[in-house]
Every structure is written in structure tokens, then in C-alpha cells.
Image: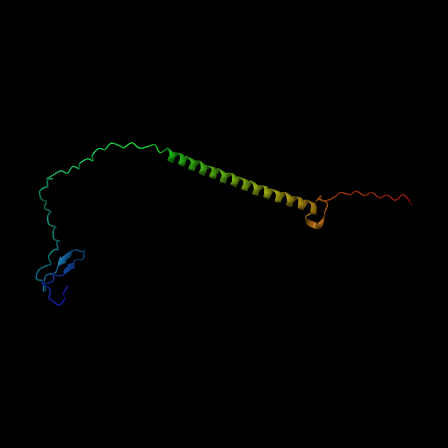
Length: 149
């Protein structure tokens, strides 16, 4: 945009607002009459032309009918797929059995460690340094009589 050229039209009159917010045109100074009430321009009415009728209707042509070609039964492929499925199933069963065996072994190992720790605690005496299989307190009754006097 070239700002060196003068504006082709003069600026519009400023708009003043009344105490209630109503906008008024401020006429060029000095005002000789009260300001005119500002009315925004009404939008231009929409003009519709005549409806356009279709000149031609496009109907696509259906594809030509073809007879299906008979194919051979792919029995080798089915046998191969069945064999692969059986092999994969066997691998899955093998992995499941291996996992169960590993779990049983680890549970057995933990049980053996627990039994060993229990037996060791019972034979060494545990706390206090007393032995004898951890029997606890022993009741002793001593009765002394002096008959030789």
C-alpha cells in the first residue's frame, strides 16, 4: 500500500456516544443541530437466481460379468499350515511344561531351605546359647534330708 498518495476519500464524521451508550454521528464542527442517531447500514438483500436443472444424468455402467475360474484345492498348503500349527502348539505346550517344572523346582528349593533353617535353629539352641534342642526351662525338684547326725 502506498502511503505517499493522499487518501481518495475524506474520513467519515466521528461517532459520539451518549450517556446510555447510544452512538451518534458528530456532524462537521460547529454543530448547528443535535447529532443524528447512528443507524448501521442494512445488509443488502440476497438475490437468488433460478434453480439450475441438471442437463444430463450420469449413470455409471456396471462392470461386465465374468465367470469365476475354477482353482485347484491347495491341499499341500493346508497340510503345511496344519503342520506348522501343530509344531507351534507343541512348542507352546513344551514351554508351559518347562515353566511349571521350574516353578515346582523353585518352590521345592524354598521349602528345603525353610526346613533346613528350622532344623538348624532347633539343634543349635537359638538365643541364649543353650543347647539341647531348644527345650526351654527344666523343672528340678531336690529334696535333701540330713539323717546322719
